Image 1: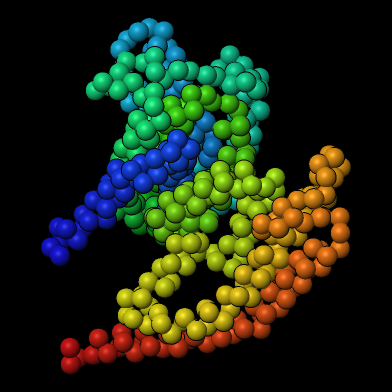
Image 2: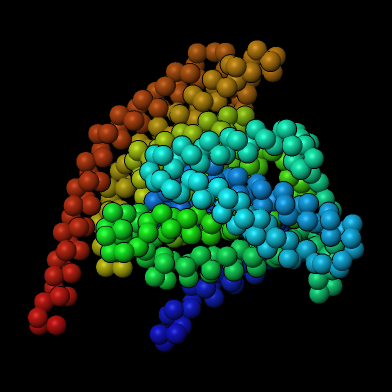
Length: 425
């Protein structure tokens, strides 16, 4: 592989994935889901520019996503009314500029401090904007929101973006450009200074840089990309409402980043795909889908702080050095115990949810894992408790085998590294 191809093949593969995905998942629901994934990828990466790159934990990042979307949808309605001939492809840029402008306004206040103070200021600003959305009805539209019609805008290369497939490709192009731009930013000296501020802001001040200025610039750029994601959302759904700039949306992007892995650039991408998929599919399967998200977040924070990407990268070196096979027996031993505890936990949650549903006169009979189950009887509860408690106990019992297997792998990897670095080579 040539050096040039080694650099660009991941981007070529990503472009091919974006272009070819609709050929495999061609249904309307799949196209809508993939469009939402593209929007959330940009949103999550913009959030991680603060948290993962600069060390700023924001509890109100949805403000810039939502405000960018609202300005974009008002711009669409104004351009449609004025009949200017502006195409819909420029709307995400308007959303990004709106997010950038509000990032300057709010960032000037919030980035003066870091750490917990910054988080609390971001939370306060987020709640301020969210509560104002129900007061400033002329701009936010109250509880009903603001609607538009993207097909009334001027066509672009003969496309009016009525079919969902055209919207998907619009989102995919913007997503690819934003991913490339944010990745390039991490490779610049400014990106390195953001990492330095994250690690030790006092040393950054000592060598002559202003940590507050670096935080402010990173904040505004992050708000710009969040606004782009909001503009794409306005195009995709043709509606914006107050929920899209509230605490729920801010917590969702935090969930995506942590589940994917804040320590890696690809982490928010993975997290956005996984969380969006689960959010859309679980909401159709169970009424307790939000509880699953909360438990999933707690589980990753406690047991896998590196997220999905961190867990995969942990195995990457072992796979490249052909030592991954040493982990297979240990994983095979612990897998049944983990599966039993998972099934038991799901049964307990669904049975409890059905008991609450009895008050709504929905009946006690439910379908669980393909079987008809009566939530009012004791048998399914006993089975669920047995699976959960037995699975947790068995996992704790056999987990030392996984730890020992990793110890063997680490010793083997260290020996290979020392052999490769020996003077004979």
